[in-house]
Amino acid sequence: LSCDITREEQVQATIKQIIQSWGRIDILVNNACLCHFQSFPTRTISSIQDELDVNLLGMIRMIKAVLPIMKEQGSGIIHNVSSGAGITGMGGISGYAASKGAIEAFTRSLSYELPPYIHVHLMHPPLTKTKSTASMEIPDEFKADPAVIGKAFANRIESKKFVITPNLQTHLYVFLSHRFPSFFGRLMSKGMQGNKTTKKG
Image 1 (tube, rainbow, N blue to C red):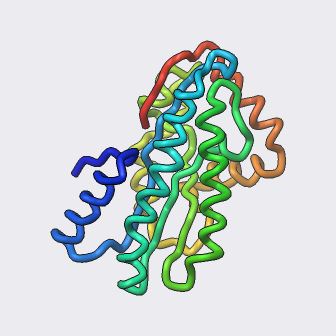
Image 2 (cartoon, one colour):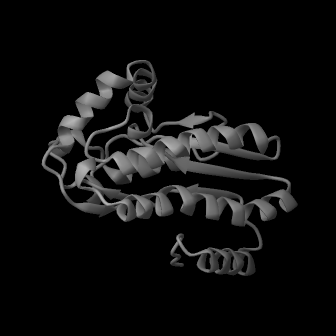
Image 3 (cartoon, rainbow, N blue to C red):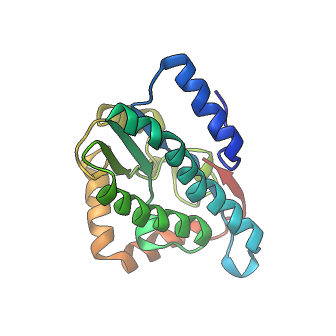
């Protein structure tokens, strides 16, 4: 199935097709993202709106579409994929970081509203070797294998923890980022220097 999550009618049609084929939706993972690598002074408002429309509002559209189904079932799990940029901020990807920061707060808010039958979690992957990170001035050996990370998350898909990480290193990074956001934000911002591209993840 393919779905443009910026279009409400496509979201609804996709969910309808899933229900017709499988009869239920047990788990939703919101992982679609758009990231512009560009300094804020040269950004346009429309480009930032594009990021928010995919990363934040696209996620919200998907959640709104599955909620009635999960409520009727009496159960459901929703995972929203976040980023360290949403905790620390990051130079060169301000729109993306803003969308991930909003996802952090939105997901935590839903975690207060939706239990006990529907559980909402944040997934925090490490810096991973993908199209989105290809142009970053960070050596590939410091980027995780997406297949390994995907498998680790799949093994934790029913975890009860609010923040789910694929390994101990990422858990420590998230933990320390919350306590020293300026340090980690500046550190990662150095890897953004010189990037002026748009990436879909």
